[in-house]
Length: 257
Ligand SMILES: NC(=O)c1ccc[n+]([C@@H]2O[C@H](COP(=O)([O-])OP(=O)(O)OC[C@H]3O[C@@H](n4cnc5c(N)ncnc54)[C@H](O)[C@@H]3O)[C@@H](O)[C@H]2O)c1
Image (tube, rainbow, N blue to C red):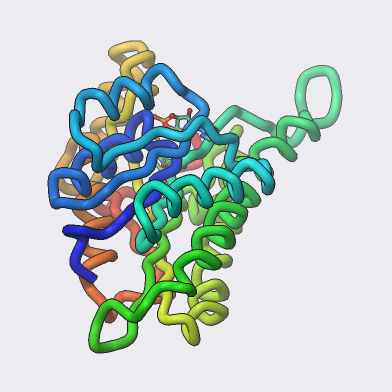
């Protein structure tokens, strides 16, 4: 599917990988709708993009009614929806046991709620809207959904119990959702990034940053958000990509810590 002239909903679009994809797809000629909790940053990006092809919606992706209302607003504003990229996510440390007792169940639930259930919530609402589109290509495509997993889905490190479980859920969800939506002409893929330099890395002490940056096989550096946006572009444009979770990690295999 060509990106130019299409409408893309991008969750987590106010930061990191989501922001890079917002800017990239906008530059390729798409209309972009940012769903994020960070209204200041979201509005700032929209004003920087500086035209009527960008809009921000303050949405908590875990809320069914909020997401349904915001998708309705996107359709009202841009006419239809063709692409949904799910980047919004959180990654707090949750261990199986703590010093004073069993691991934090509430925090574990929250991570699953945001990363897994939130992604399903946005995707189900977007897919329902996409299913109403006229077919867009000879193959009968109506829409494309891209989830964000992580290499932690396969090699979760110590402290990533909740995060890796949520991302493993995303990997499992991808093929099943592609099967559900095949009859509607909607493709579903996922990206599993390795270590990508987003704002959270700026907070790390230099020695931690340097040690992480040495871990990829080749090239030996952190990935850039624009490289993830480039893969998202490919997953939208290449009609034969479906039901797949693509690792984008310079060959890294995470160790236990
Ligand atoms: N950066 C990496 O190295 C890396 C590696 C693997 C996977 N990922 C995944 O990629 C995605 C993006 O990561 P990032 O580094 O850009 O993160 P980030 O923290 O820079 O951006 C995440 C955005 O999601 C938003 N968000 C969080 N909870 C939300 C909610 N309930 N509703 C709406 N918006 C919400 C935040 O406000 C933020 O703007 C995440 O799912 C993350 O798990 C990142």
